[in-house]
Amino acid sequence: MTFLYSRPDRSVVASGARQSFDHVDDAREALADGDASILVGAFGFDAATLCALVEPVTFDRYDEPRVPAGGLDLPGAVIASRNPPPEKHVDRVRRALTILRHPGGALRKVVLARSITLVFDRTLDPITLANSLIAANPGHNGFCVDLTAAGGPYFGRHLVGASPELLVRRTGREVVCRPFAGTAPRGADPDADRAAGETLLASAKNLAEHRYVVDAIAAALAPLCDDLDVPAEPTLIGTPAVWHLATPITGTLRDSATTALDLALALHPTPAVAGSPTDLALRTIDLVESGRSRDFYAGAVGWCDASGDGEWMVAIRCLDIAADGRSGVATAGGGIVADSDPDAELDETTAKFATVLAPFGLA
Image (cartoon, rainbow, N blue to C red; front, side, top):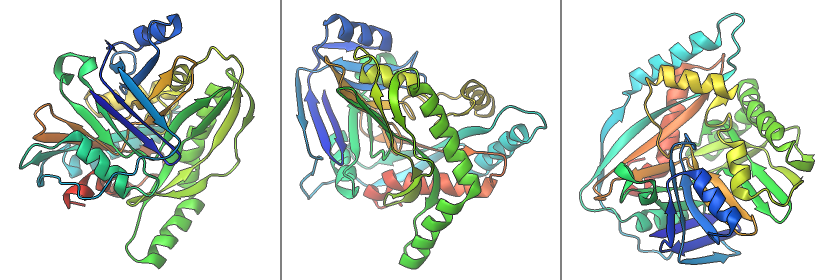
């Protein structure tokens, strides 16, 4: 088992597994009781039922991002299927809009997702893909997680991605979150690309969607933190594929016993990956997506040590690689609000797929 985690200012490499946890409460208890010195891994979109956390044999943390060497060799790939097909996803968005626009309805935002399946012409090495994604990302964001600890059908599978979104970081009593919501595709022409970012930053629809996320995170942190700093306006953040609205939120932890994993679970799922209000959004996702499991997509990847320090990024822009390394499933979602345009929402998911398609020359 090798675990990779890279952010612009720090990175982690861990290997081996002293013990594994397929339930997040067992992992939290082991950390709290001193039975585990550190945890690395992931929990799923449904954190209560899906967990792949391990206490590694080795754990090395660096105060710099991972910077892979060049010459990374990846197999050829083709898109074998789309689930659902694009026109079906547009129909699902229209169905969600009917719910969102219902007079007196309480639903304000729901995140709908679709997937693509890639098939490779030879075995894909997860570490090589992770290094490729990290090298291509300006912030060196990326991760690779062995999902074997989740058991059953997850044995031998890996989740690899280049998420730009920090769910939470805890360093001593300092807590930092940087939620993302609101997206626009990047453009090849510099002037058009800059205009797309400026339009996003001025978009009432996207600003409202983003605010749902910020307000929910602030509300979740309020009982746990003092001195919360929540900026009134978001900033514009660019990845190679898309522009995002992002807001840095900071606070001071009230109780030092609250760990980074505790914070991640208190925040998850944010409206950025589920919707608002959360319970109603989750029921709507189940209804509109016909009960399809999101597995580890839109869960969280990260680490937490015995002192409670650690950090977790949202598991997006990722590929779930099959145990034999010959195929993988990528999922992308978008936040739907009452004035969303169904075709634009399809375009947004297409733009988000570009992160995992680009290394294979498919973006």
